[in-house]
Image (cartoon, rainbow, N blue to C red; front, side):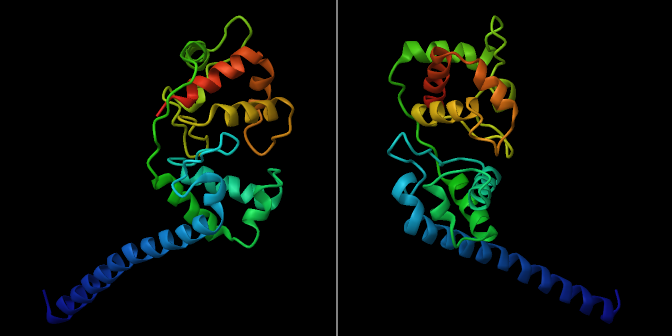
Length: 206
């Protein structure tokens, strides 16, 4: 290797090392920004670690970053309606939404005890196998057998039963339109028992 080539190789190594050093610093800054927003706004309803104490508000710990980001974007644009959330996202930008998504995805979900185990067992059947007699498909077909979801579909495992019930009813009434329209048809086929049972089962997953 010539002296010039060795010199160029050295520059490339220095540049690579500098870039790698910037990545942790940027990630730390990103997380710090998210923590400031959480402490200033989100913790009131969702808790500092994404474990909301009220069943009215969703647990966000472990939720997919891309999904959180998209929901926040939809709240800001008005695509997803909420008189509570829209003032919360006012003044935030796309980078803030992405940072919050990564923050909540990094939080460790906590296992919760199901209040009615018998009801949850009915929900387990519906979640994993659906109801072939009424045409309700298995929830696991999209959200996975453990309800972990994907970047496009939400993690459902451990979600408050009451919150899940509310969202299913909003899908049924076509009042929630920012997510997959398939949910409108599915929710409309669920009986009250099935809706509550599935919600109970999901709440106990981790």
